[in-house]
Length: 119
Image (tube, rainbow, N blue to C red; front, side):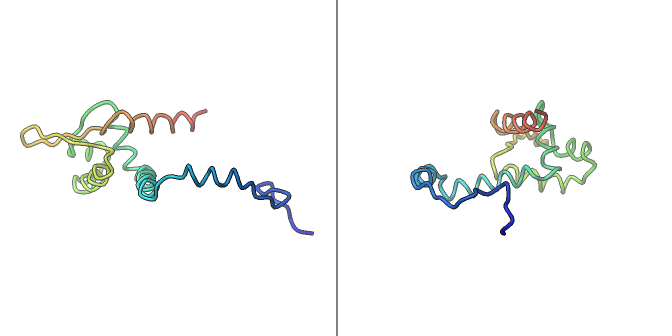
């Protein structure tokens, strides 16, 4: 007798309408790829710490490096990745380059996930 899993149906039945609707509402391949890259970026503890620090204020690379106990080069590398994914943006003030969250959606994404974790 086959072993039953609580994650499987007890019979094999494909609901064609449900499958067709799921296919019709699928994300575009480029969207799913970029979405996966964003979630991969968020899966890194250092990048999450950077994003959380930028939640309330702009910070320069030097400040972020001091906060994280990392080299400025290491932090700059992480910020470049976050900037390329449009999660952070920057502005120059003289010789200092300040980073901030790109928009409120980045903050919302982190806060919603944190709420999910805490509930």
